[in-house]
Image (cartoon, rainbow, N blue to C red; front, top):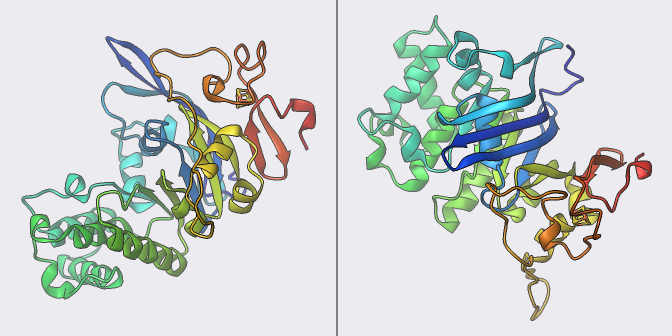
Length: 336
Ligand code: SF4
């Protein structure tokens, strides 16, 4: 298996949750590629499967979730290892988590233990992945990392407990922990949801700066297309567990193809316009427990073609180089 120049390749990912209410197809066909050093934005409404995609990649799904199909290929020295073939509790995936792929969560309090200082937690993570490092060396590295993320007085803040820090400082500490082992891929899952607007801007600026300095690839999960426009090189748009459009940030913002993507873009208020009517996407997201036949967007789509969209699932078609869409408006014979 070769890596095709990608640090991460996700193919036909399907993750389902099994409960008494039935089977919830949280992810039902997601494909993307991530090149070294690029930022991929994953966008879509709440519940579309963005966070479950990240959990599936790292094999940290809740107990009742299982990835039932697909490949998650991580490049290694010109070859690729499929993370879905690894034992989810085994030593190899543990080595990969944190060391090669790190994650920043929405709410830092859920990833820090409240009974240990942030320093001890960062030091433990560094020593777990760097066996030869002494405690003193790991502490120096942790202080350096806290300094790089702009933590005030890192030499003393390192000994604080998470609950003593403000929301913005906790978020910086979590970024420091995630980056302390120099991962090749960072997954940031709505990293600014739990902080106020001014801190949001600082955290995003910090991530952009560190991504440039460290050259890592980033998967930025967000419902905010403004964040995507600001940070991303390429974009995956998700709807009801499916990847419906994928392309460069220019392709998605200047030539959106999927009616859902167009709807998302039309619903963003623009400061440059005077008084304007924001066009929300009609209808609501259908229940994932009650799967539809055909295109999952068909009950809300103004371009729906009766007898086609409600019966057949559209295939993913590459309409221009690197720009893929799953919609019957773009038939297979229009593929480049
Ligand atoms: Fe709309 Fe049909 Fe395209 Fe689905 S496949 S987005 S219903 S036009």
